[in-house]
Structure formats: C-alpha cells, structure tokens
Image (cartoon, rainbow, N blue to C red; front, side, top):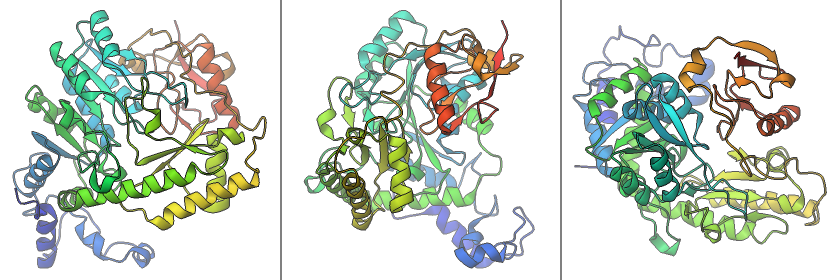
Length: 494
C-alpha cells in the first residue's frame, strides 16, 4: 500500500475546505462555537477537524471508505492481518480482546500484574481468571516476566483455559518470551492476547546506528491479538489506540461486535485522524524516530549511572526474571540514598521542574520518546546530580517508606467469587480498619501503574491490608474504592 497517504486526514481537509453549511453534531460548528478563552491558546484550526460521520468521512463502526483504508495502512505497518482504530483507549481494546476469547464461566490465564482494564473485561463477560504470578527480580525488586513454563503449568492445572492474557512490555519495560508463550498457547488450542499499551515502537528498527537491540512487537512474535496505546510513545492523541489481529484463529465478527459494546457511538475524528497521521510518520520515519529515542535513552542511562547513589537499570538485569527489556524506558532508583521513588519524583518536579511518568516504593520511571530532546535529558541528569549532591551521595536512614515491593513473598488472596458475580453482589460498607478477612466488594489498585492488589470477590488478607494501610497513611493515589480516603470499604457479606 502507499504509506505516503493519509486517507482520513486528507478527507477531512477536503471537507473543511468546502466548508458546507453544517447542521450536524457537534454543535460548535467548526471553530465558531469554541470558547475564545480556549482558542486564545490553541488557535482555531484544530477544531475544524472535530466532525462526525459527515459525507465522505466514513463510519468507524462500519468502515467502508477512508477509515477502512487508514486501518488497512496501519495493519500493513504493524504486520497485522487486521487493525482497528480505538477511541476509548487500550482499555476498551483489552476489554474487547477478553470478551472475544472467553465467555461466562470459561477460564483465561491472567498475570497478577495486569492492568485493571482486564478486570473490567472479566466483569463484562463473566469469565474466571486463572492468575499467573510474575517472577520477581531479586537484584532490582522489579516485577518480572511470565515464563513459558508458568503458562504450561497453568494449562496442566486448567486444561480448559481458552486463552492467555499478557502485559508486554510492562510499565517498567520488562518483556516476556512472547514467541515461546505463543507456541504453548497454540499447542493447547488457546489464544494469546497481549496488552501492548507501551510497545507501539517495538515494530521498528532496533539496531540502527549501533544503539542496541529492542524486543520485537507481540504480533511479530505470534500473538493472536494485541492492543497498543499509540498515544503513549508513538505520537497520536491521548485516548487513541490500535487493536491488531495477528492470526486467523480470531473470530473477527465476534471481536467487532464487542468493539461496538465498548466504544463510543460518537467516535472522535480528532483521535482517529491523529492515528492516521501517527501511522504515516512511523511508516516513513519510524526507524529514525526509534534510533533517536535509543540514542537519548542510552545517553541518559550512562550519565545517570555515574551519579553517586543513583542507578538506572539496563540490559544487565536480563536473566531468569527479566527475559528482555525495553531500554527506551528509564527505570531509576535512589534507594542507595534512602529516597523512595515517591520522594524522588516529588523532588524532581518541585525542585527541578522534571515530570516523570511513574513512581513506586523504590523506583521512578521516565519514558523517553522520539519527541524528547537532549535538553530534556540534560535537565533530568542535572536534577538527579543535584539531589545526589544535596545528600553528599550518602544514604539517609529511615527515609524510604517501603523496604520491598508488595509482590515479594506475595501469596494470592483467596478467590471466593468471580469478578462479575462480585461486582453485582449486594455490598455492605464497613470501616477500613475492620476489612481484614472480609470479601472485597471493590478493587484496591495503587495508581499508577494500575495493578490490582485485590479484585472484587477476593478475601482481603493481612499482607494486602497492611500494604494499603501504608498507602492510605501516606496519602498516595489509588483507584477502586468509592471512599477515596479509604476510611471505609465495601465488602460482600458471607
């Protein structure tokens, strides 16, 4: 196909140049109805693209024209058999994949560190999760990969599993052996689904200019379906994603029906156009974009590792627990200085104006993309040097709030009810201090990264209660409970 084309973008440009009298939704009529207080900062042009299923602009839910062509162009770039535009983010892609693989009462393997959107999919379809425990890297404390052996064990214990859902790469850039796991899945007649929200860049040149090799994308390794947040690392607007089909084993009719359930009936043409334009840039310049990203991340990693008391992990951590690593992601620890990841992120922003994606007990995560500059890297490195210098490179005792991640020595909570049954069960509100031993009626999800510690229908054990109690006392952010202060929680009475 001609990757120089941007069919949806071109169609909207042609439509707005005609500027017909507009009596359709949305009501702002190009730029005329947008608040001047907003256009003062943004300009007016972008609002002309916020249209609906107007003449010549196709329909996302039944694409036959320019949207269909734009999706086919994207499928070619990512080596997929079919690609769908998503306007409700990778969340709706994960939901649709789960719903298209399993039904009510059927089983699917899910890693315990999966994003909360998988739980939403399980609630919608009524399937039962079979949880897989990721390995823990002893050197770093990072939550590692799911091994092919763990998946094989899952099939032996649950031979009726219809699929395996994986997160690859994780928020921390950790990757599993997708190729081997896909073979295991297919030997058992199951589908491999991959949340590749953070991996849209893994389909492009990985060795250019000697900057090092990256893992390959999930579709290239045999995944049956994957969903990508194109907005995270590859240049589209927030909330725009892609869902790729990689094999003939996927029932695309069922998938498309499920996409109708989880996507808006008023899809944003701004989001879809941004996907079309981002695909165009990747098709023509993706190799150079990734080479630039790798150059920046390698430069940052080397310089950070020269700062006393601060560590930025690289390919040296690859081993049993970490099969592969996306090195465009900077996972940084100042644990040797006695600073938790939470404290480090706060200091970087408040004292140096450097904003990072994620912080946890021990680490912060900086996402490097093609759009970053060497000036950005310099600011990050200078800020870390300043923090280290302030502490004279020496550890301050008692500053770190957590000694190790919760998944260390983590035993799965008791599974009592399926997520769907629990979600629709009658619930009772009790004091948080009385929650230990009770069946959770709502999830407990530190955010980011959005990984549930407890799902509805599981019994709250002492370990999870203690961890969340520390989160609560520190005033940290979490999703799930109706009571955002976690002074109360909904439970399911037995």
